[in-house]
Image (cartoon, rainbow over all chains, first blue to last red; front, side, top):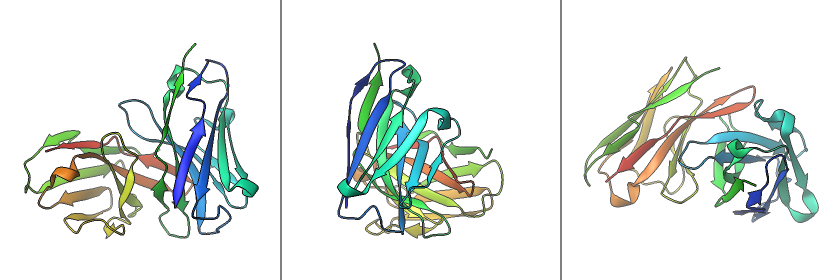
Length: 121
Length: 107
């Protein structure tokens, strides 16, 4: 299994951050899993952003919900993140991760390498 | 909201030492607890899930325990490749995922 993030590494304030996670070695339609985004500001801890089920249902961190969209592209076996109206506080390494959901205690069992996104004019 | 703390925030130990990291929740989290290892410059990796189950490929010198609001990650016989930051993670059925602030282990 491989997850690979891609997208713009530099976004201007007030614009939209857009990232894609290409998944290989597993179908994003597998009902055992959901597909997640997690971020980590430089030198800081991890923050869960949200995830999308294979059905297309989404669950978002309430602190980001108003600005956030996560979507699936089954034809390309990938999923995407759009975060609008960004500020410097959104500067972080963004990770995509597979979330094993067929468990009492879901867990992020595979992660992408991460992509640094800087919000700056 | 349930808050997660970890102690210590960082530690230095020698190769061969036994290292213990504690993750404390603000209330009983009913064993919804996982641990991740993040080596410098790398993505986090699942280390232990469901409090004490080692992820496939994780060396047996790692172990997890705990219940209620307090959980522990132990590394027996610390190795140089264990230099990393360790995060606990709690799952809330809302759903919501909370990570602890991390413990940086130096050798």
